[in-house]
Image (cartoon, rainbow, N blue to C red):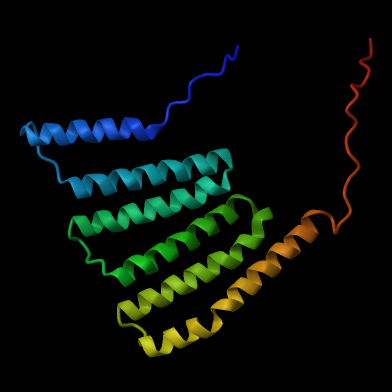
Length: 187
């Protein structure tokens, strides 16, 4: 007989809460600006994931938490009409969020130095997209550079992963396995 505890998922609870809130709004119990509330909740959830990733030292939670936090904040500002988000700004912002998340994961553990390569690639690409979208750089100057040189990012990341594997494993030399027999206790 298994004595494992029941793990509750947040998604069904979120569906119930959102459904109750929407029904309450339909019956005029209260009014809420739903797009803004939704994106605020996404940003808060991303912030919680980011915090948990830092505390639990989880690279995945840090990266995804940063992405959700930035995306939630961007779309919250758009829902509140504080900024106008064109598709180019959204794509550029998400690339920058990915780069920031990867840099945050690197900052959590300097052992993960290889994450700097995709982080810089994402930041440069997102910055280039935002620069063309906002008119700081002409599209004719950015697009050919990205179209020509994006495979270099793949090469650099692959090389960084190979170097990390070689350095991380001690250059192919592994430590002897630990003994599985218990050590005698002194009496």
